[in-house]
Length: 335
Image 1 (tube, rainbow, N blue to C red):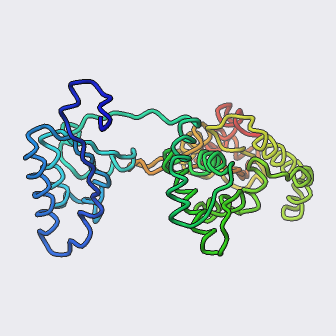
Image 2: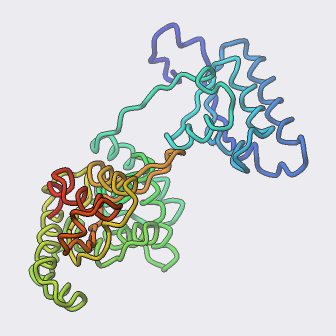
Image 3: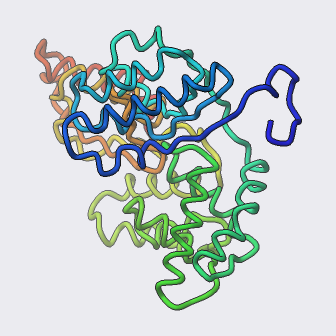
């Protein structure tokens, strides 16, 4: 629209972006935030329907607690006339829907398709000069593509290309703090390790260009040094990890599920076992607020105490648990 390259019907509109974090910042006294939102509403109304306003960070208005606060009512009043776009994640939308009455009547949901890698790389390379000037560093040629790969694999609950841009920004900051000027592979891995809590050595082994072939050949010996007396389980885990390294297998699911040790998982509540099936199918768990925990890069070890025939035939929770754990739905997903 800014370049006049849009349908004629849209060229009469003006697009404004509002940073709600700045609007909320410093509002300490009762009623101060509401006054700011009301003033924003008056300015939008003055546009006489010719404005498209993008409110980024609108969820900050209701972040303080879970009740229908004055901030949520102010946001509802702001949305009512229309002409406002809210870029939200599923979690943020669920949060607003839980505290704003008649949320579904206020908004029309438009789901944006995921970005492909080529488009993400174009966006990242367009931002490189700005990041390099800010942190006084230079990025290696392969940095944007590796940032996309790392974001897709280890930061899946965030959307591209924004999360990959954050990885580049964090890696550049780390490089500058250490007095260096070149942002390469190791800095990107370090940035992701700090954000996710995953061990840097593990990221190094799995990422492209690792050159860790010998460590993959010796992974059984490495695991055996920590897990004693479980040779079949070690071989199964090593096989799953090598399969993940090659990129084979279902990318939606966890790296592997292993029934080993037979240590009383059958006593879990049936609802918990049903959640386990969801985890194995989708590789993630989501709560009522759409907060998601990602299991795509985990190895799940399920321990059972199902050795006795009496437990299997029992009518109690343990017996039902053993039956479910030995069902085709679960056993077909176990290594």
